[in-house]
Length: 111
Length: 112
Image 1: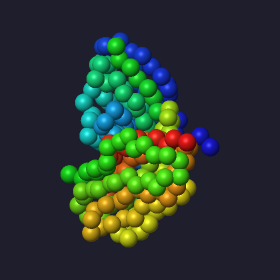
Image 2: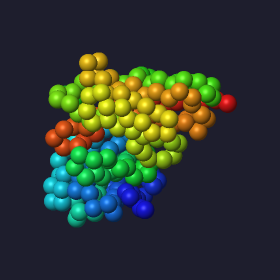
Image 3: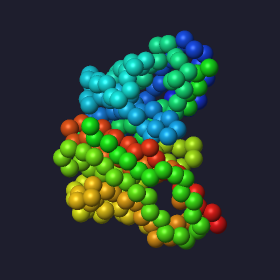
Image 4: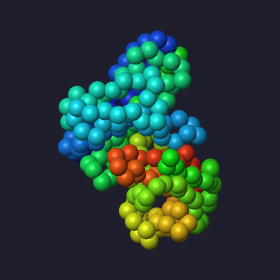
């Protein structure tokens, strides 16, 4: 039972470098999400995708891009990483009106 | 816009103590309400949910009742265990998109 799988689990980047966080779900869900978690801030939505081929900005989209490659996969890209993007990133998926399932998180440090 | 406010932590309790973590919300309409739990180094897991007023969600000894009149969804457990030590997040779902809006989380520490 894989559920939501995201990679990598840990990454250290230098300021200005780019990277992509990968996410895949095997539950045939239409909706997918990227959240970031920061101390004292809870989880904040970066981008979400209601269905294959559609993406929308969340609360904190600046500095990020996303791609809904197919129904299973939803990637998050940092084009030019900044120290303010040091965070824990969670991918999630759901079917409309039902529980949202989360991946185990990706710890990103930008130095 | 919609928002969730939950009590700040950490909440420190002895084993077998009674737990309450307060959560209130602001929303247009009647969203679904959730409690998620995050154990150290892990992702979030759904603990319980309620989809309409007066519904009670329950799981693993935890309970929360959807109170429309007080816009609250407080989490309770009658007797906590050390294994309940985690961060607890209250959340509501946006009715149109299923996006979750989270509170800031409350860390619970239970000591033997």
